[in-house]
Amino acid sequence: MASAVWPIILVLNAVVVLLLGVFFVWKLRKERKSGYPTQDERTSMLNGKAAIGAFWISYAFMISLLLWTIFGTEILVLPELDVGWAIIAIMLVASISNALLRWYYGKTGET
Image 1: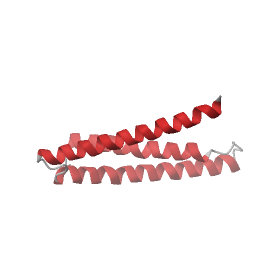
Image 2: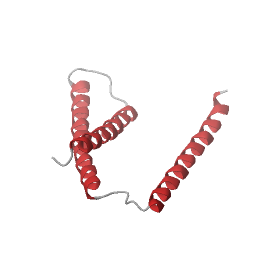
Image 3: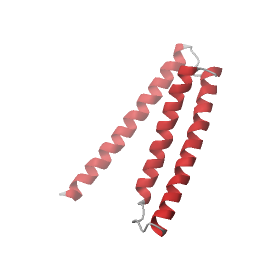
């Protein structure tokens, strides 16, 4: 039963990725045809500030995760952390912090 489900899931996953790609390309072409610039100096500066902040937040998270893993396995004798879950956690922290910082800097402005 489980072996028959995976090909369907893989095909559906590919279809969803393809549809999202087509949607984003369509949206980008529509915005270019509208005549308005997709980014001005303010938005590119705010996006840069948010990206740098998200980088440092995710960097600090990775270091804390590394230290927790080292001290947890060596001193506290905790079970080892699964690498897949650690990578997912890092990706979530990086993307959520980038989105929140973009929203925050968009609200507050250049200050």
